[in-house]
Image (tube, rainbow, N blue to C red; front, side, top):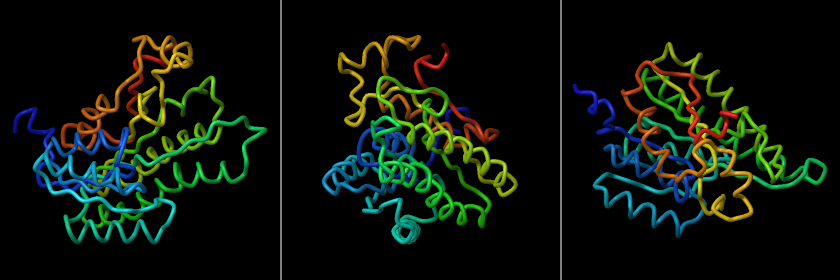
Length: 255
């Protein structure tokens, strides 16, 4: 097997949560381009159908499910259906996430709870459900989408629960990597910097001094720029790698 062959994901089944738009959609496409059959979960049917059509155009099997990562019964049902229709899940990408901008004084309890429930508890629910399957058969790779926000405090928008949730995801990644390594399951995380999406309009002038200028590369990233690293972590190309947090931030956290 050549070096480039180790990046292939042929005959693998991947699940991407929050895969209908933004970063999640780009990661799903990258996995499909590497040969994986891809299932995505989403909460917007129209966007899910568009993402599904794109994945199928790449020549892989694909499916989209309306599943809320905060609902354990929906997570279980989604994993069961994917396993039945596509096969056991070989690759899990935990991407679903939300954020609210508010000061700590103004933040409501509902906002705090909702961010933690999606960004942390949702990752835990999906990972535990899929992880049971992976541990039982002795193989699998998991990539959690964390954030450089686990290591810095973002400005100008205050978002304490988002920062806390992503820091917890990084540590959860390490905990599961240590626990599941003897079972042949690898767990790593991405820590993206500022990425241009509909939910993160970092191309707007008001964000330039905060999100672009402080980065060594003096620019924001694009969702597709996270795809190659995701394929690397999901594939045999990273076979001796687990518990790592891969920072992709244009050099923002260098300073």
